[in-house]
Amino acid sequence: MMTIYHPHIVKSWISMEAYKFVFSSNNCSTSYCGRSFNRVQFPFRLIDQQPKNCGYDGFDLRCASQSTLLINLPGSGEFSVRSIDYRSQTIQIYDPLNCLPARLLTFNLSDSPFSASYFEFFTLLSCPNDERMGTYYKPIDCLSNTSFSVLATHSGSMVRVIIRSWTGCRIIGHLRVPLVFNRTYDSGFAYQLDEDMTLTWGTPNCKPCEILGSSCGYATSNTNMTTCFSNLAGKAICYGFILFFFSLQVTSHHKVTPEHFH
Image 1 (tube, rainbow, N blue to C red):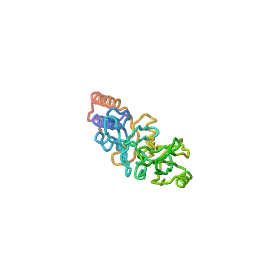
Image 2 (cartoon, rainbow, N blue to C red):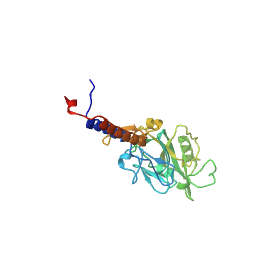
Image 3 (cartoon, rainbow, N blue to C red):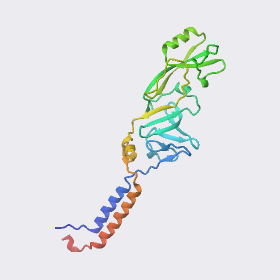
């Protein structure tokens, strides 16, 4: 026996399915900071331009100018963003004031969602300027002056040699420099330590979404769980209209009489 459903029931079911399909896509659009080529999308969000639910905690970005993105790392302050790679989940940052060694003296990632592949330890020394300064000793310009030069090395033995042989040299600090795996240093004193820093994040893991060409976002409004969303919102809307018109056809072709409910 064929079961015939009341048209209003059919219309309600179709409308619900169309609603779920249309709104299963993420409504957080990609943003840009002026002329910057860096796209801002989940887990990052551009404050004052994207709602809070469009970003993950700790991934807020600020647009400082027509092309400069800034990120605030708790305990370390603001850094400029050079690039973001969503597939590898890496972010490349630098000091907007062009004195990264000074920032590294207090650099700490413990309260941020980011980490480094590994850290290299450097010692900073302040030495009086004299004729021994040459290509082997390259001072860090932004920390040096006309009287003293600040040098950096990761060699403990070199530090001991300099302290013993160079009158007036003293240790002024230690740095933990975040590095990528393929970066190596020799034992010299020719480092400005002004290269960009590359940091990574593991949570949230949106790599599968990037591989699939989908967008990433919160699964629901009351959880930190993330999921992938289709980027076919336009097709979903068309699909919803098709279902709606189909429901109208169901209504017109299936007149329900009292006998249907006996």
